[in-house]
Image (cartoon, rainbow, N blue to C red; front, side, top):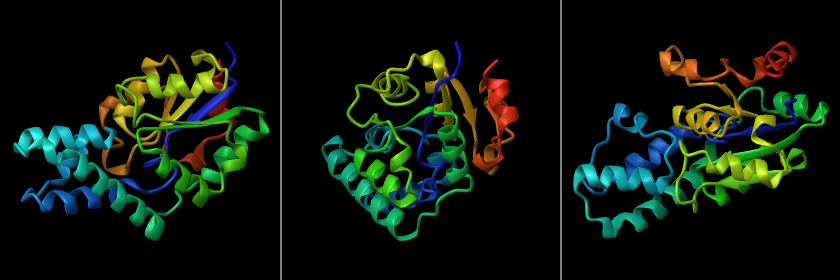
Length: 220
């Protein structure tokens, strides 16, 4: 089935927001006496804020009654941090123009809340390229469950086998593959050499590096 549709993740792929999520989580969890390590945080990258908070509250035995307030605090801080200092990652304009020139349908699928989608669309100027956006925030399951990708594809009337996904996280890659979509991963440099990325159809170091040769490889 020929490829007709591309779906992009947001955090860590279009903007360098992962360190800002990490900062926000550290700051909020410190209010509960928890000093989270970098390794601990990285083990839960790609989870929704709700799942992230529940996971670490369980481990540190923090009362779950506090969880909704903590989720809200983390999201609020992240949005502020993104607006103040997030950088658009290399190749965003290139990738969106590449697929637009091929008349592809283009969507976003993220575990982040709709408010973050709106902020990033405004910051990057990609609004005119988009046919759909999907957030897993209110779904029964987030990534690595494929539902957010399936929802985004359905909104564009695309079959999953017609879709390419671009991801930076392991959970996102698993979600894309579980949806039966092609997946291009652009992992952070610190983890890019790990064997687990072999499940992807293609691994690159930047969106800027994606070109016609890669597209033809995926479209065979």
